[in-house]
Image (tube, rainbow, N blue to C red; front, side, top):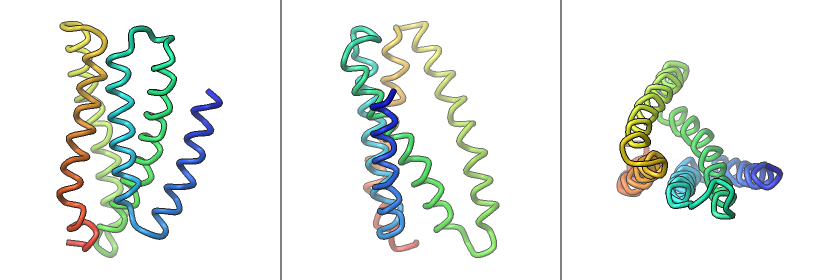
Length: 144
């Protein structure tokens, strides 16, 4: 627990520096890669008490910290003047809908195939989203 908190604290400071000086792209990319890799590691862990799980938890902690700060900053920067609250409200409404979608899919995969598949599908979705983000990051940075 102390390790996860320390890693998240250090990453939050790095994310804040990047968000202030270079925009939201770098923290979001790191969050997607880290979170996706951590979830994939969860899916291949033999036991919930293995050392692999501790590393995966730290990667997921970095993913959660970066995705929250990065997504809110990106949405605020992309919102038209006077619409920041509306855009952030839409973002915060869509996040639980996505969670419900992945919880449902993960529950089915858990029952049908085993516990690792629930983590694998979310990790794979993070990594696919990261690949898409690489494709569009120049447009995001340019404000298009």
